Image (cartoon, rainbow, N blue to C red; front, side):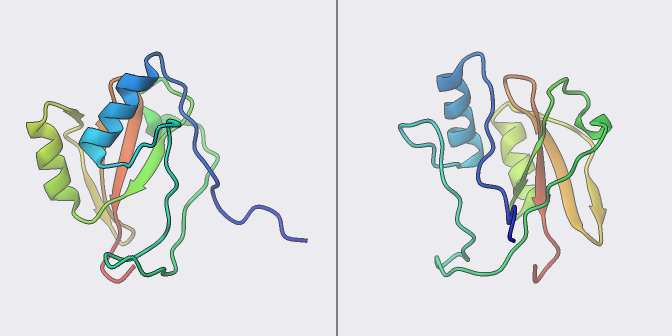
Length: 126
């Protein structure tokens, strides 16, 4: 019997949904639709499907700090350094700390609702 095979959706409770939808659309380039969300497909820059993985984990939430939210979303990005520079220039609350390991490069931004968002540039070839 097949059970869970990936993430079908991530739902974020917001005090001001329209403002938060616009923030994600304007600063992270997420194509937020009229119904308030989007559907991500794993495709390359030419739109061709390719294999990929999405991590799901239960933890004590220590890595969510300084956010008090009960969740954190990890978004895959093409160029972490460039995106962090742009987000800072746009006045976003980008955390100074970044990490690099065999798993890739990681950076964080706090959205206007106080949610910590993890940005991940995977290693070359992944």
